[in-house]
Image 1 (cartoon, rainbow, N blue to C red):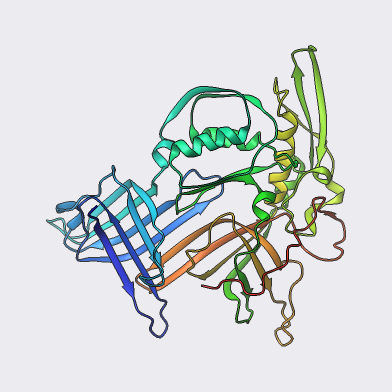
Image 2: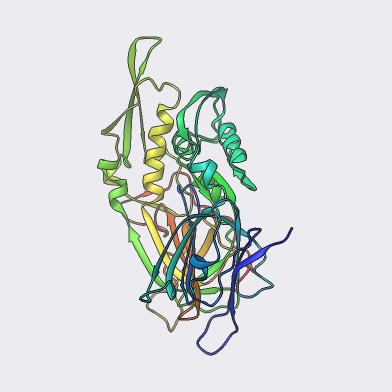
Length: 416
């Protein structure tokens, strides 16, 4: 099948420059020529129904509005890498919007153009609604059906434990997945499910503990040195204590529901000490003084999953309580849901001391690949999460009841 390049751009390594290659192609005969490419970004994040690609350029002769056309009906494959030989994994996208504005008086030339794409599966995921029911099925089975219908190519789902009756009341599959994530629990008790659609059209649905079982894919150093490490910069640490405070229910909940069979209200309690956490830190960010279940959750007639919903609220609040973000050299091999090992130095640079609190394993919750053509930059902006900090004894913090992921760090992690 014949393919047509919408655009292609690359640069060679030079002093003060970063090497990159980017190409977008499809089976539709359209091409942007004589255009000054300015910026390409590709983003993916937990809980978002589609990866997003944004392309910004100055169309010198107005080729896109005068002659060419980007079809909203075909898939455009984006290839990104340091060079042509490494840009082999297609990121499939479909057009979601475009704006073009001429900067020349009297004709459509020198057109500033912004083109937005969403993942190739965004139409069935976000734009199609269903009214259907599933009788006595596992949540994971319904998720697998939705993922298959949407056309994802690499589906990774954590199995759930209890068969229930499920109704999709004329919701989009994206909204249905949000509901299913809240009501999912694994056979081993993992709650707080989330999902992500990767730029490579992959799909993952599972608890943080499920994702954290994978070994780290990168060794990352902040101001560090090492032959098997990748240096990061612009490190930002955020303690989101409010996520685990009483107003969100992150400290604990008493869940109530009405049991229609017995015509009575029933309740159960849960708090952080007995709920699955992300297992990437020794201690949760929640102070022990806040542990309790004074807040209430009313589940109406939900007799099947009321406890799961309450535990999931606690798990998600605490699993996102500590965040770290940074920028690194462009790495298309990283994806949301990967685990990375980050080593943060202290201010004792002479002895290369490691900051124990914030070093260790982190789960990537979102990332953005950026190619800045004007400044010849290819980097990846990464956001990571975990429940708290490391250390042998952190005063007044709740110890992670699930325990830390103690899988050994591989001796030679791949570098990019």
